[in-house]
Image 1 (cartoon, rainbow, N blue to C red):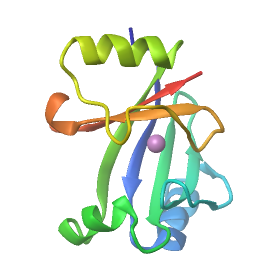
Image 2 (cartoon, helix red, strand yellow):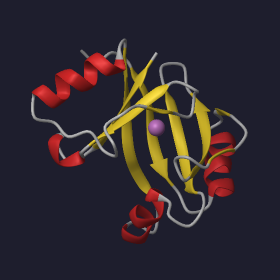
Image 3 (cartoon, protein in one colour):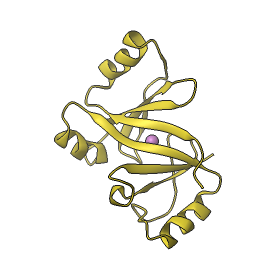
Amino acid sequence: MIGKLNHVAIAVSDLESATAVYRDTLGAAVTEATDLPEHGVTTVFVELPNTKIELLKPFGKDSPIQRFLDKNPDGGIHHLCYEVDDINQAIDNMVSQGARVLGDGKPKTGAHGKPVVFLHPKDFCGTLVELEQV
Ligand code: CO
């Protein structure tokens, strides 16, 4: 059901230095930083030939990223994002298989202006999974 790996997200406490690592040390193309208040994050995307890396910094007081950074002060891999053709059908399939969709279970608008949902890490090998309709 899932398609391409859309991105790997890495949570960081210092977005400028993380962007510099990818831009300068690794020589990758990076986007401008974008605030996503609805998700409580500021993002920079690193554009790779076959996928993207999403650098995430907490935005606002109740950012879901802050708890992750409290546990992982050096940052770390936060989630994987897989592409799906039809997110509502994907949600129905996952739920019927016993998987849990986070939040109210409904898609929200993600970093690329497309519908996304997050799935419970305990149901996916200990990894937070994002699905994005492309
Ligand atoms: Co993401």
